[in-house]
Length: 191
Image (cartoon, rainbow, N blue to C red; front, side):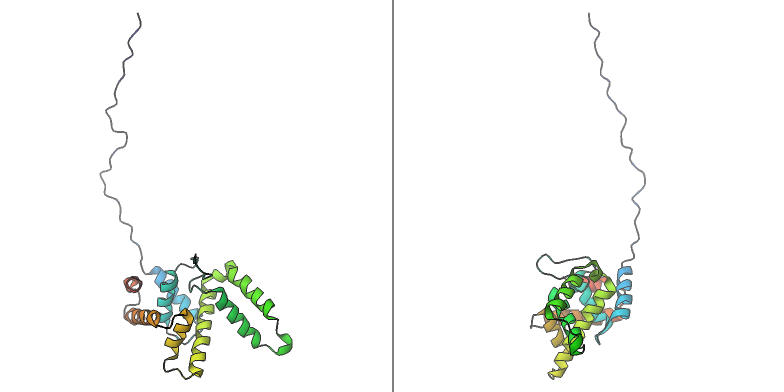
């Protein structure tokens, strides 16, 4: 005769339940906004107001320096295109005495290497490049006699002439000037 095998059931809970509610983590929502503001203050190479540049950066990258577009060559906080960097390099080259200028192929090669490098994602350098380019566009519009050179420069910057982009960031910037740490203003702008 064989002995019967008895199976015992476990009645205790294997995972004890906590009697405490989850802790609420306090997040400083405006910390990144303060960081970006300091970067813009130090690296803005344009006459455009700080809050407008901050709104532009949020609109372009949501303050993420590593973001990269899947559909274009846009990179960095200001989402600068390879063509934009080439234009900056080309204009710098033209400022040199003729004997020191490089060929377009050399200039564009250097611009492309910089655009594709990790150095280009440096937040300060990206802001310097983007705002330098904007100032070039503003100066061009001013030389054409534009009534509002900044608005016209943004149309060139975006490659869209309807003015909606600048209207949105300017309206948000006016609100941000009155509430400099209010992230909700930026979130509303992109909705």
